[in-house]
Image (tube, rainbow, N blue to C red; front, side, top):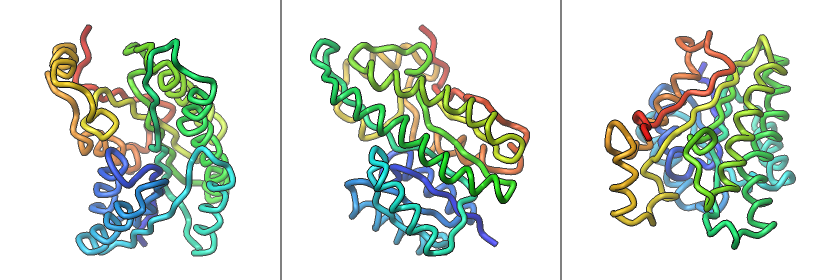
Length: 245
């Protein structure tokens, strides 16, 4: 019987790449999205046509508790059990540090940290009852040592997500594997506005001298869901091409 993965922020970027990788390995996929309905629906149609799995687009703003709860209620109505949760949805609101507002910081934390907490709590309880499940959080190297004051809110949220990963692993032991993947620079919409000179300078800090493709991050995320990774737990796996500064 195929397993089901719920991927947040899956209409584009790393999330969409994850949806394709999981579907290619016979997972049914729930594609969560917030604003990109057309992209999410098209992605689901493509997954079903190419991989012959079930793909369901579900809208929810991960920063809003009621929307998360409504999405989970819809999943319950369809009698779907989540075998793997990928907390991928994330935003950044880069600006000069002195220009950052309380609302910007709060919105970033609600999306990148509080939303994953609530999803992991609600879905994790059901996984624990079944004595199996995988939770994979998508954090960032910004949580470790690639600090940028213009991304202080983003960096803080991703650091918090690492702490949440460790606490969830302890809370849900021994039945649920909880890990995180920390990508470095990746070719996503979030980074498409960067100018070429800046990209060139950042590439010099990476041993592979390039940004990651979303699929390269997705492959690591998928690996953590497999039986081959069943003894990996409470880990933060850095995928950054060999950052060297």
